[in-house]
Image 1 (tube, rainbow, N blue to C red):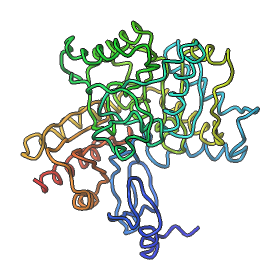
Image 2 (cartoon, rainbow, N blue to C red):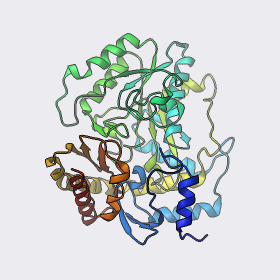
Image 3 (spheres, rainbow, N blue to C red):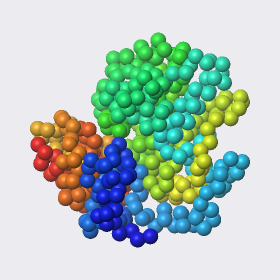
Length: 428
């Protein structure tokens, strides 16, 4: 296939192809990528840009990684896909083994799904079916925080922020669940009991109908990149136990080192009943996710029958092979030094933005750097300014943020941070 992208190609794309949260024809300029290597994207106009987004947070090992490439080449020579119903294969077994080794001991079973959104669907099904199997059929609602984001499928949309999220158009169509205000206690702030009072009160009054609390631990991602207190998360776990409610952690964005811990819940030293992972699970090479749960949950469900979910590409061998390779790279432990260094460099590089009148807040956690503006960005105006600075950054709402690959160099980090400061200052 000729990979050269012509102007005619771009015009066809803009007219006929939907892009994420976009329109046809496209309202924004599209930047065509012809190749990628390390932390750089090569655009069709010859420019190279440093990727500050890890392609929506998943390319943690960078592009064209030799170990990742070889894993896929080896697997495709064996088999690219086989149904998982009634069959199994080594890549799935090895990936499940590695995931169970990485997670706390109570988590013992793995369900492979297609994507992060589908993982959330499966987790919700697990929680609902668990209580059905225990005869508590009234426990069929979810409780979560406002400001959350759990994907774009029906179940996930139903627990996204109901007012300021991107799915408010479907109010009245989606299943209705319960919401409390987002955690008001920041990551480095001292937790006090009043911070948890709204959550406690709601759980006490609704525990007879709540099957599970579903949250993004420590970091609310696409809902606003809010970081909250580990002590708050500890209290959530305690209250769920007290009121016999399951706790689901969506670690799709935060898992595999992004916050400085292998999983964000480790900041609070808590263990969820059900955990969703995705994105970096395959180093960004293939679409795959996993839903992991405690043996108690899986045994309770399976004593009454199967969980009724089985994607066509469940445990796809190519994706699982990529997952095994990604886990092996992470197992070296190098990511810990890389993320710690990124955190320091992001603080150093983004802090000057805090002095700008248009900036409300600058915050950093692990390999996540956020510049929050006082007003939403105008995408058509701000987006092209980043490639002009030699970087790829994709803002949304009031946020100009980066989540770079772990393998990024200090020099490239400096370039990313300077570019953000320059662009933010230019719109002041």
